[in-house]
Length: 324
Image (tube, rainbow, N blue to C red):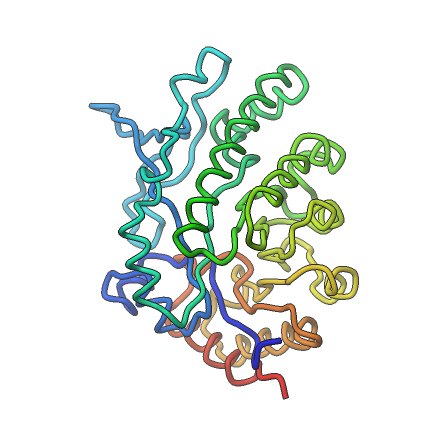
């Protein structure tokens, strides 16, 4: 067990990077006291001259957002609709395109006292975003062979990238697969078990480091499947979606590392630091005992969160997170 509850964020908005890291994401993470930082791959974009749309190699369509507190663009839909589209939106097989070895080895050497985890979208999210959510949901029933083929290809790529990242020094792997709304999963638990869980098992068996899972939304009905797949941790435990940390800790705390749950949609978007500290205290009270908890927001440090609010969350968490 560590000497205190570790600190981590899955993503931080550009305004944090500018304010705390002078444009460097990793210096900003260090300034906030993170115990782990992410290896997030560079994803090639396709060139559509004369278009305002940004389309990546997976066929996902994004529109630019000029707001300086956004992530720079926002997802709109996917272009992969039929089997004929598969070759047009097949990403490069060479992991160096996504994770250049020299760049990331140098980065890891620069922060010898910090753990690094490989994090990227998993096969489920890359499939429904490549197809577009409506096409995907209809396809589960009307064109399941295409859905399965795309899930297969996205899984193979994820494994290739994860193995490469582990070879560079990543100590764990995060499958980033948003799978739920507030109150329910995107598809039924039965369909998730049929289409997705077998692929998660493959990923777990394919890499030699712990595998964790990220999803927003109400994920509690999926957690027993996550455990059965061999996944050892879960992020982000979103309270605004109905996830009860105390309940999850009681049911899964001996089998899952719990990460997150400081509410980033209500608590962290206001400036009452006493309220922030109170929510950190709640998370510690519900999940700290016995270890296997990492403090984080319930999604990310997004554009609606002020820098001093996040800084106080992590400062206070380090203060009260010690194991006596």
